[in-house]
Length: 113
Image 1: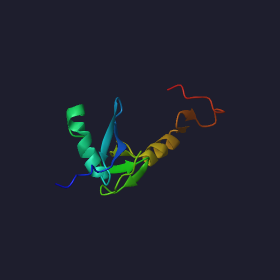
Image 2: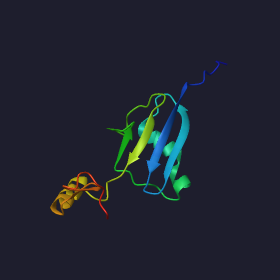
Image 3: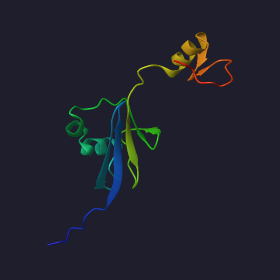
């Protein structure tokens, strides 16, 4: 009977963050595992109580296709839509004479609000 050779494995992580909590799951997966499969293996629904809705996947801060094959040390991140468009927030603050945390013309003093 031929001896079976175990397939090599790699260590990766899957990350999900919300405003008030983060989950980081370390996994050992077979070489050739895709980003989407790693998310499935992380079983986030069990850890979070619900399946998180991801609009995109990324690896180390860069958006990738779900079919991207992972390499050792990759961290798969689940991205969701921002609740507010950052450009619109900057426009609104500019109309109000404010910037992100500072008042315009105040010499860099933080806002009171």
